[in-house]
Image (cartoon, rainbow, N blue to C red):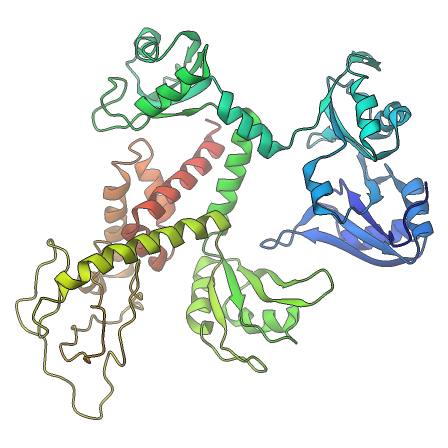
Length: 544
């Protein structure tokens, strides 16, 4: 079957992510078969590491077909074969998994080329992959994608047939997101942690049997840990759901020490746990080092962007985002090796005018999409809360600073008189309402008294610190004393939430910048998120 004339782009998959100079390696290999127009290897935006796949463009469809026939399943590194197929531009076809089958219980001696040969009698195979571990050995399962639904139907009839020394199981492919959604609606296994060391299997069973019949129960017996964990398998899904709803974050179950909350959730598979650990570790390691930049001029280049940010510290990656046709999207990411250098660049360059740009630079910490959504929800909630309190706060006499919270003690003396006419004032123009944080003070900057001579057009009172930090006291301390002071504040907040690792997590969070510490002290949900990330990193290192 001849491909449509416009199909001159091929997809190259299963590239080793540690392959040195992958674009050059692909170009050298593919040029031996047909002239190459361009090569693009897709990379991580933050680290610029290869994602293990890319695209190669040719002048004609015939050249692309010739390369697919000659180089599909060719070794590009020892023990590593690449997959080469026509690029699928339709995102629905690419992401839906249509005409795709899952093959498991594969003989580990069978490779992708042999698997394709076995299934090619069912119809034209677009792509075939055998899952490999880090050493390049087969994991015993793979995927076959057909051009038509008839090919898929014929492949499903091979279920139970023998390939090599094994009888294979062939089933319709289900996307991971759909598998996880199905698992959330049907799981029967739960995980329980923070169980006191003195609890027995009978104690745990007596509690969980209140929710339904238990198939099996495992209780850890680690003498070197102060707490235990349990895995419980129920006969019915509903029993597992009820157990989680009733026991999670409970202090009254009798299975924990005093003031320690029980953690109960769906038991995850090893692959799910590994994915969560990697995600948490990546978030923790990159948080505060990666900057998001927008309002860039149309003629900006990677070298020019790097030149702007390099004076603040060593840069590990720099990426200007582009459309497929090469047009700039107007934003970029710069990742520093050190968080302090990233913070310094943010403070200095945010709002900085740039040549050929209509607007000054906008620089902020890069955030994951789910984190941005969560922060936006918190800010909206804070704005609604503050708008309800505004009439109450406006009843205070204007010559005294307003204190919307009862635990804030009013000053003993009124603020000083206004500055001389013509002299610069601390607050000029209307105060901007900040729903979550106030602008952070630079190190060594003294606290200024509230301005009782605020203009009549000011609509919102200045916010007081909600993170519990006494900035007057903090400014009198040495850097080491400041770290101890913030460490004590962090520890007091972390201890009720995560008693077993409070000291370790405090030490990890103290590595963040002062501004970030102020943020998590002021935002309970941000603190919870950091505790979860730190716990994941600790579990990864302890193998627990």
